[in-house]
Image 1 (spheres, rainbow, N blue to C red):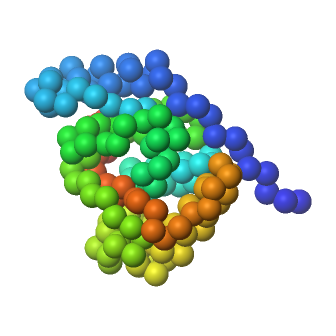
Image 2: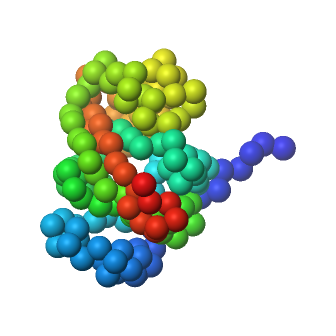
Length: 169
């Protein structure tokens, strides 16, 4: 019997707003400095969303990368240093709030060993980072009818977990 992919649920924006309210009440000065946030999930499948969220909540994943063009497709602005994002699990339930602490734009060949390690995925090597991200972006670009290229602009982001307290850095 083949594995059946469970659909990825839309993030619960109302629950995200309530989660943000709890964080805001506990950290009003930080929120005043940077009040914007997004509510989203990692990856493009339920399995990947939960797996990557697990890597964050268990302390090894502190970086992520996304094609800059994907932000335009999703009609989202590029993140900025200090901005927050609420990561949901595959069912759309908010689980953590992260704050961007470093951002840069680059191409596929500009990623280095340290960034690959900080992404916390697979064996944390640059070789596995390149292999897995090439597969992922080839697939996600094909799904929207475009070809992925190593020359595509990528947003490289480092973050820290700021909420809830049991997961905060």
